[in-house]
Length: 442
Image (cartoon, rainbow, N blue to C red; front, side):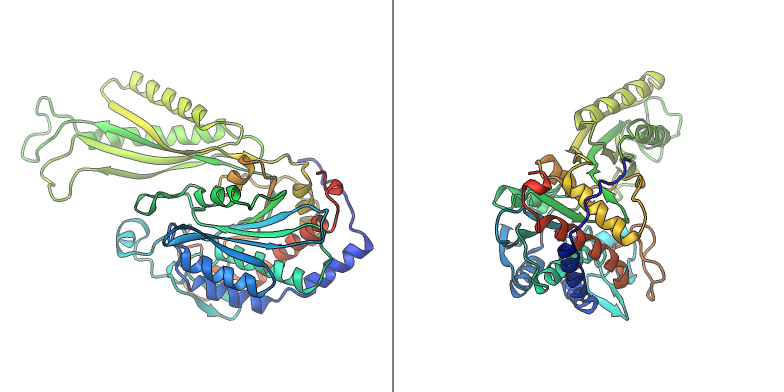
């Protein structure tokens, strides 16, 4: 990656920055995180959490409002106006969590989920906060809110407007029972109804600044056989097991996913994917092997590759597999797709966030690790908002309570680890909101 463009803060800006950082209160951040984590907010049902944040932001000086999406869900929109003539910056985070924590979900998706980060209620030990989403997204919300609060308390003379947006639907899901919540639906609603900024900063895990993020392509691959019966020999004429055939397809598909990621890597995106599940048969009729077994999976989409191109690549894979294995009876479809999004890496907000990153880290930013995680940042960029993603080290290490392995509930947060990111974001806000629009390239 090219070196970061140097634009030093003035003596006055440096003073404002130090004064604002001095107002950052880790205990206040922790209390907000605890309170917000204690409000369950699964995708499509975020009303209580959003209304809580509207009230909180109103108390700290924002013009804040609740934006309903349905009877049980909605977004947060907040604005703190500058004196005029500057750029607007939106601090953004989703507010929905990726899990429901229902008995049905535990039985199939998560397992017993007894760990502290998998519970839809908050726990606190020393500088730690635990509970579903306490790291992602609620650690991000609490940190960005604390940065904004400190900036207001420091009475920094802003020229531009500071916006805060939080939206439902940020998780990569499609909840059909809640009007298909997910797939970045909430943030688009936010942008389309008066919350369109000059720049946006989104906070997400990993201690880098990213100028782009991937989209998603969801596929179903159906493998057909015939209805069978457990009481007949395996060599009965005419019977074809869809389950057995699927077992031969899975290694082929896994290899294609790995090859796909390699072949479509560019920029800072390596678009990984995983098979999410296999579905077929009826446990009430175990004597009758079903005629259909279905695979479903997600591969990520590089911003320079359209979902249509990914669809064509998968079609070529299926055609080749059928040619090599004419005994396989298969069809497929793409049932979900969102394109990736990118911002010019030389854009002001990217460079400003990198300057903040380098100020705190004390070293050049360099090339970040490959990224495949999807966020609403891709949607912001697709709709023309220059957006920087900035984060903190994840997952937190040394938790005093048991936490789930793998992705888990994204719900274990060590407050001191959030503070360097808070100071990086503060730097970008001082750097951007205290200048004229022409100074930031507008």
